[in-house]
Image 1 (cartoon, one colour):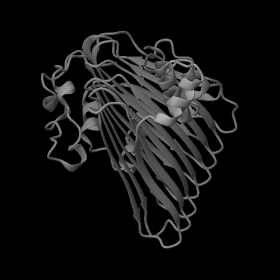
Image 2 (tube, helix red, strand yellow):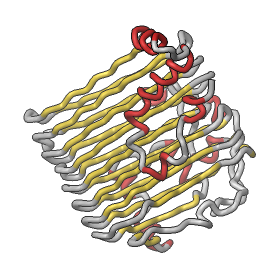
Image 3 (cartoon, helix red, strand yellow):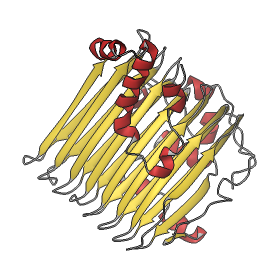
Length: 368
């Protein structure tokens, strides 16, 4: 469980200074929401107390977890990142799961809520999928008020394994979320990762996916909604370490009020990754003149036999579409929300059914 005491500052807790905006990876990330909260230990109950595991999924022992925890983080090069060190020093709630091969598994539902008492809830999740295994994960992290969630997830997919992973992050304007999602894929494996976040004063998600020998399929979907003075920052990295790998990535943003959205998506295709087929698209929708979007897709290609593309678009709601709906008797506000719902649906429909039941973005899309 979480330690009974924590350091008085974030620097003390993480064993190093809080990242500065003078650092390239953090130059768009204002950590004021986080630093305004004093680190306080989690005093709530065990968030895993009611956990029910599907057939074919078993918990790793503490000894097994000690051995494997951190291996995927190290492989993907993020074990030394400040949020990962923060998580490790905060005595996180740890959960290690092994998924047996050729098991028809029911969805795994995980929910973590930081509450509203200004406390730090740190969680470290480790997933190991054996060859041919299949798992569907619906994961929700939330905060109902002042609070901080530190989330570190690492998954290893053996040959021909499949992981369908949906993350719904719903927070408040005085709460912060720092999340690292690290995945290593073996040949023949498939990863479908969908992340939806909204409401946080600060959220920073860093998905890192490495195809260890290529010949795997990676599908990434992201959607972040910012309003007021909220900041949502996604830094993704996909690296192909062998030939014949595939990537399909779509990241969407809705920026309203004085919200700010950041997307930095890197794709690395070294010499060994011949015949890679990778596509990345960032799409952003501005609803306010005060909102801001910073998007930076990156494509690093050394291999010479590849099919790779990336792009970024920035737009507003189309007046022609609004006029069409209004000409059919639909009020202007309702017409705008219908268009917003359609824009978000490309990502929302990719969530596992269990995650969709949490109604992500219901407040943003349904309330006037």
